[in-house]
Length: 276
Image (cartoon, rainbow, N blue to C red; front, side):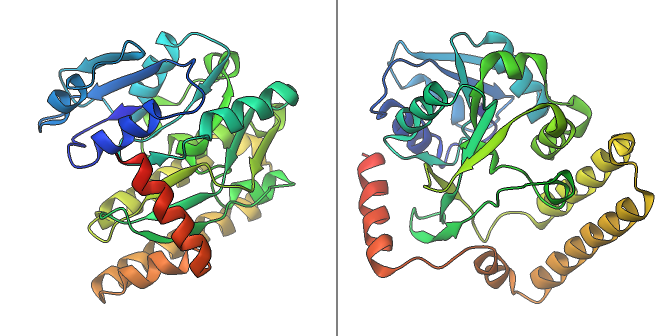
């Protein structure tokens, strides 16, 4: 779990990990130079499975993730963000799948979207990508839902020059020599708020373009690369316009699938229990 100035949500995230039905894990938290009350909140948890490290300065998420991979032990490596909340059976579900299907290097899943008040917004679906070109159009995974073989991550570190879209880059450049899969059942509550900075999203898209250019040799199709970059730039422009016109909330809703009333209630009870 890489962390930076997450005092508002970090306690929910940590508690949801400690509540897991699968208990044989280590929770490695790496603080990236937080200047708020994040570190004090982390240290308030007394659990021997928590291993805490921190930078005195903000080095970037890719560097933190590579450090976490370096410090990790065991068979599998799972990602978690400091503002998200795990389902109680998240680790159990993914460990059982990987144990039964060892040929897969990394797996992910759909995610239930929540807002700043832990209320359910909708469901974020991630597509199964059958070809490399499909995978390039969007992220292969919802990053904090992933789990995979630790040795795979040690052999395929994040590019520290591409923080902000380090996940897109990692799974884009390893697509040909890896086996990926997304489970359809969600395993995590993914937080998406209206107060998120527009610059964060647009900056990610800029880094995605840098990743495509940096790894253009893998693509070998200049026309496709040109069209893809134009499409990404159009997405960035559309998002900026929606923000300026105060339609950002609608943009977020457009990205998510609507849940039934029954599912909304089920997930609301689940997240309430995880936040205790």
